[in-house]
Amino acid sequence: MMYDLIILGNGMAAHRLVQELVAQPQRPQRILMLGEEPCLPYNRVLLSSMLANEVEDAAAELASAQWYQEQGIELLTAVKVSQLQPQQKCVSAEDGRQWFYRRLVLATGSSPVLPGCVGENLKGVLCFRTQADLHSLRQAAQEGQAAVVIGGGFLGLEAAEGLRHLGMEVTLLQRGDRLLNRQLDKSAAQLLQSNLSARGLNILTHSSVAEICADAQGQVRGVQLKSGDFLPAQTVVCALGIQPRIDLAKAAGLQVARGIQVNTRMQSSDTDIFALGECCQLGEQTYGLVAPIWEQAKVLAAILAGQAVHYQEPLQATQLKISGIALFSCGEISAEPSPEDVVLLDAQAGVYARLLRQEGRLQGAILYGDTQSSPDLVRLIRAQEVIKDPLALLSGQTEISELRPEEAAA
Image 1 (cartoon, helix red, strand yellow):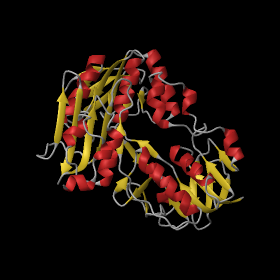
Image 2 (cartoon, rainbow, N blue to C red; image 1 turned 90 degrees about the vertical axis):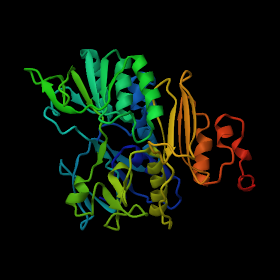
Image 3 (tube, rainbow, N blue to C red; image 1 turned 45 degrees about the vertical axis):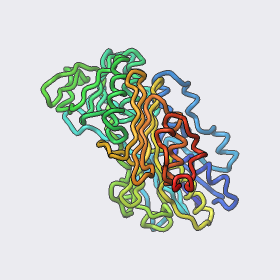
Image 4 (cartoon, rainbow, N blue to C red; image 1 turned 30 degrees about the vertical axis):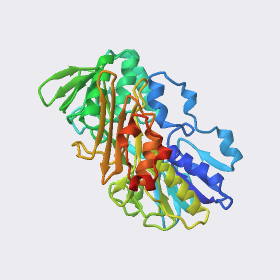
């Protein structure tokens, strides 16, 4: 059967694209969405909150099957696509089914990075990317007493805190000198680590895994560190980042590097095949945050509806999804301070703020403990206006609306 558009993937990027498409008056009419997971599209961002039992599982559902039917979109789940044939414009599944397209969108997402050590495939070694992973982690929390989480990024912190919340004794390993080393400087990272440690999370920085060790039944029994220390554990969670899923595209002859290479129209090396989300690469940039992927979906929907638009990188901001911790990071973050930086620190209250400036213009910001000004700081970074009194801005003495270019130049 021929479709005007086939979307390969049923994750957040694919669903957002569909949402944008149904708002387009000139959208493709016959649309097929093929998902590898057996469930309807869901919000992965909520997985950590679901693990900590802070939200119900139903809250993650992005749309019902009825919604897709009402929009005239055919959605097939639990489909394992095995081959793309661009010359025939054909998508083939492992079970022999085939579908033909006029245009194709690859939204195949990413795979978790494993530590690359002995024992990474043992029973009890888990990741945290899917609903199936969520169910496995919940089961592990019921059966085991101790867990080791490898990786001190956002996902690792959220997984570790979720498992601790479920009653496990959790050790988190970070290879570098601080948590969230791409988003935070040393001061903010120290505040974060102190907070998490006070909750009962064991955090080891400068720590790398030499081997994941097994018992006689092939089950994880612990982690051997390169330092020589041994950490007993029944569960090991790998949260070392993601790698774009490019196998299908590469086998089909599309240009790939770390991801599926696209231009600013989200178009691959085949003009009728597009890619977006965690599987794609534009220039040297790959993606994992929601904001740029949402923008890609908006632009691609317009392109598929016949509009001449191009994708531009949005400003990326990040926030930690752990209950009771307010943390915000945006723009260009450097570990070392600059003479133009503005810093406020109240260690006793657990509040820290740093504004990174260049020639009076805001380039980046870190907020810990109080993130109320984050939307205003995002707007200032985008506007690139000179800030006359940044200290007053942070302390709440000046409204953003009062900061005008003419005032800054006065």
